[in-house]
Image (cartoon, rainbow, N blue to C red; front, side, top):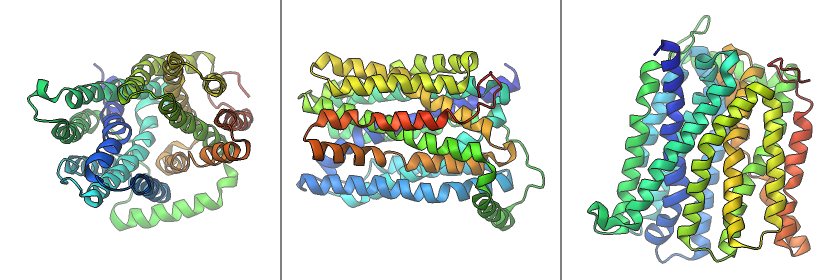
Length: 419
């Protein structure tokens, strides 16, 4: 295998590595275990508030810090070092989740918040390494490969963890609680192990006049302030970020509402987990297919295709009546979720100056952290005004439409004939 291909695979395997945290910890086991073990006896409102506050705090912290981290990483040619440092800290915090005893909700929440912050920060600089390993011609394919491996890797470990929790005796474990704690350890080990290929094979481009230490920090922060002032020079970047904020807000809101609809239908927890696994495994080949679409029909057109499917999913969700439709929606979301994310990342990578990719991707990830703000407000407001959850779900269409309209004014820099 050539060094270039080895670097691409090493980079993409980091998606495989960190997605285990997203599936097993964020979406799967932590919320349930936090409620049933660490917050046992607390009111439902208190548990919801604690979880919401932790997620909001982590998102806001990363949103504020990500651009600054990116600017410093650019100046010091230190994206890879930042990624490995954030990963190490995130892995340690994730492993620590196995320790808090029953009722210790605050230490558990502190560890979760810490792991979430470093997981998010690592992704910010990981995304910025994409131009270093892919080159301009392969951005779509390499970005899609990363998301595809993320779906597969995260889904495989999550499936194993679900088996451990539902059948602890089969793994020689005394109970489900022990299985959950060991699952957190497996996530930490998985994340660390599959980071090694990136650490070994990925080489970061050296920036001209790279600095070190405090000099890099000072120069990076100066660059960040200058870029904020000069953002009007990057019209297409600013316009794309606004479009991305709108439609990715819709994507995240629909994902959450699909689960809420499943609960309203009275589906058991096992069915919801099955649907989540379906989305993960459908997302693996779908993300690769979208990478192919991006190269054949144009990256922007590929995003439009994904947004069109999401519009259909939103309308279908508004008229959902049968249980089998919930699973069909899980498949539909799996078909486009990774593709929209992957092509958005590669499209943005083409728009930004290569020597400032970490700074710009800091803004990109900041926008992502501010997602799922408008959607719940729109949905909740419409539902409150109309008394209909179905109309509330349908109202999310405005985010996809508005984001698509703004995206239509952003020229595809790949030269695929789009304007």
